Image (cartoon, one colour):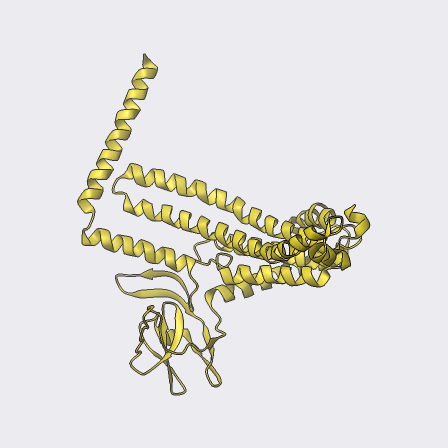
Length: 358
């Protein structure tokens, strides 16, 4: 009897909550405040996901003030042009440098006139010239910072080993991870004889991806590994190392598969060659899609906290956002592990000897 009463009570409570939420959403839907709130949430999500030419910590939309710092813009347009991104004023003004004018349009820089004219073609693409861009963007800055942190962390670990067999400082945290990558990733996949020359890359890519994934979960608004250009570069490095490491047995299994009839050899050759290209592509998409999807879900849930007009909806969304954040911490480590594991597996395929294969 008591159990039945509790079920009815919580059912009525939930119905009342959703009815109230729907009524308030219908009341506010289409209002200027609701449209403005949705616009702010979308801009906040875009700020976190997309790269930018300045590093903004937070903004005061009412006063139109942005708190952060500009980054250097480096362009090649009949010579190098170097100037601060503050000249764009967050895309609101035209930047002038040595008599040339540049406009920031959809987060890309185009050469334009003094008025900042942008003309579009039939496909709504700008017709203006886009100079070669070597700028230090937000993502590039975080890559540099991550590289510096990794350098000092591993340099400190190396110095502690010189003082004695017991590692000290941050090395106590890094040493078991390094041993795990060596003993459970590199040696089983590459082999005890050939794994050593691949360890520097495997360690670098693991900690690089892991640290950048963790930075992406901070309020700094960085999403480096959610940038397909970054994951493409990492996958390309793995692809190049794999192909240059390939021995005769590796190429023989691609172009002239041993142990099968000749007609099958001819059929399998293009399939195996296609697989060589698909492997790095899968590496690139797997890391990019998982990180990007996680950030979109998390930022959308945080935005829902401000959309709900009652304390129950906001509270539930906050709890769900916190739970997803914990999961994202695990995903950050998992994606670094998967990328490193698959890279080691591809290296193992490339250096595997005939007697090892059988």
